[in-house]
Structures are given as C-alpha cells and as structure tokens.
Image (cartoon, rainbow, N blue to C red; front, side, top):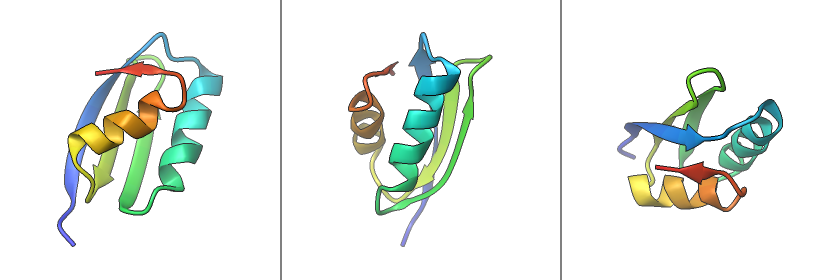
Length: 66
C-alpha cells in the first residue's frame, strides 16, 4: 500500500478539536500517522487516502481545513 504524506492547514483549531481530529483520523482505514500542531494550526498525515479524502475526514469533525 502506497503512503503519501500531507501537511494540512487547520483553521481556528483548539486542543479539543485537535484531539477530535486525531481520534477520528486514527480510526480511518488507510491512515498510518497523525500529528497535529495546534500552535502552527497544521496537521501532518501519512495515509494511503487521497488528500481530498483526508480533508473530508477532518472537515467532518467540524474543523475548517485546506
């Protein structure tokens, strides 16, 4: 399975929403690694999913991402 590494910009992320994103992504089949930096409002994700699929999973937690 081919993994890609994505850096995603999060908008107005809090520690609570970062925790929700991390929990959600860790439960998604195909996500290998998640690291969220609240201070820089960014997430690093290694996944076999497409960038759009990762974005959708994040947005489904209620956090704006690009």
